[in-house]
Image 1 (cartoon, rainbow over the protein chains, first blue to last red):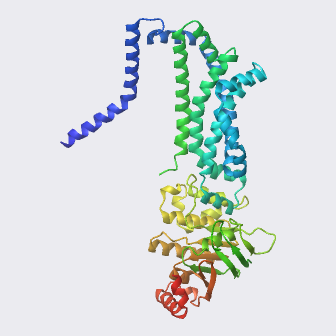
Image 2 (spheres, chains in turn purple, green):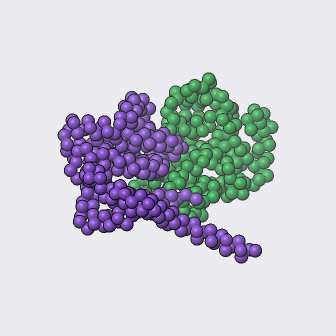
Image 3 (cartoon, each protein chain N blue to C red):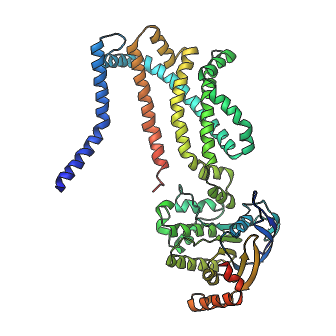
Length: 259
Length: 242
């Protein structure tokens, strides 16, 4: 009886291990099935998409445009995170400043992304800096709000301890404040990546001559669904890589002190 | 040499009906171990926070040592207040001044029997160990004035006794002025040179009593208990406090 239970538990564990792969295979199978059944240009089979994907990589087109988009992502993401953290911490710690700027935040949070993009292009021209600025303006208020909430929840006991033992400003930031903000920083990073990706595409579609958004726009005009899907896969793969290679290790490193 | 003069004419929290501290005057002599004894909630922690410079919203004056120098204050809080994301050793290193050698920490860790645990994170250690780390941290700054706010409150009696003994040894090795808050009279008699009894709302001094038992005899339970009974008989007001 006991050995039965043991094997059952082991079986369930093995199944659990392969569940993610299984779900992916089922997804592909459903896609293949529907595409074969419809037999339409607007829904190519996985195989066609894979071929297009490979050709796009070999021709250098996909890496070039993906690279351009990634570069914009890195630049605008870094700017909004750095600025957002600084402003968020200040607003979280200073009631007067927060009362003053709260309305501004609400306004910027609620301006549609498309409006900021259009205005940036109209005011500053169809240039790279305008594109980056538009993305930053869209992302910044989110970071500020998240970090501000985190700063408000800072442990006063630990802050008092730091004050009592005469910690310098940088020491307090590095050893007392930032570790407490870590979950909020990770939250802002994840939601930020997701949001910025999407906004960058629109920015590129409206006013840039390279990048994923620009390419997708071309494919749309040609009704080239296979290419659109191939680019989407590249897109998802890159985000997954960032999650696996950068964010997950960061999470793990930050949690090492927990019980 | 660190004499401490405390004069707080009024400390009232915002939205409070009555002042927490009113017309309080205390003076502590250098290297004296003083226990403040009073009921919970009588404002002892408030007083320590004022002394540590954490609370500046009061009327009055607090002088620690010579004027125009910032005194070094070690504060052992009611809860250990260690940074959970730093190891035991890092927690202590953080409070050191740049010119202090790390050997200070080694000696203290060894003394408190924590050398084994120095690279562990606080959450993985027992409460008693965390308290010992907090004590080391306070001693590591070589304080002019050491503030202790019921530091043994959640420890089981044997652990509390051990840590208390270690604390006394450490203090005798490098004497400095200590202000120790407790509501445990027996603990206070074991540790202090002088007992100050405080009444609550507003906080004021009821009596100020020197403990006559020599340091050598402080481990003698009977002597402690005898003095405690004597205190309770001689000062009926104290009985109401505890």
